[in-house]
Length: 133
Image (cartoon, rainbow, N blue to C red; front, top):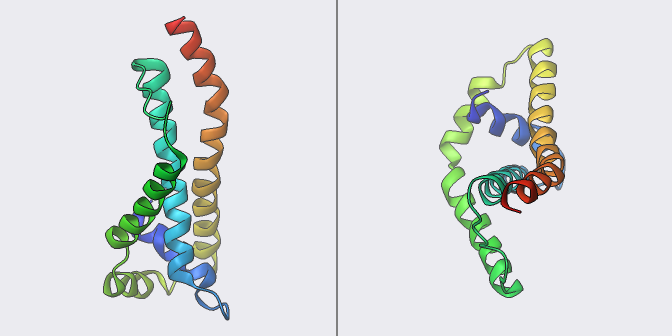
């Protein structure tokens, strides 16, 4: 699945809703999903390959500031008005079948990414204890 299609689908779900902010919804959705994916990678490395311990003694204020910086930088990296408009033009004429299939794929990707995190937690912690004592 192309990333631009992912952006298009998430954006299109709220683009026509009155009082909604499709840009913010798209950015927040993608940023949160990528955060979960990054945590899965971090946990895999930390528990299976080598202990990292990055989050062992983190100050909550620093974590909050880091998350704000992450979301802001994600916005500046991903959002481009002209490019997003071209995505709408490129995919806006989907057939009903393509739209339904695309919706299922994108929803599966979003939910699957978050579920992967929660499913991997007990597995990686169990394996980490077995490997590193």
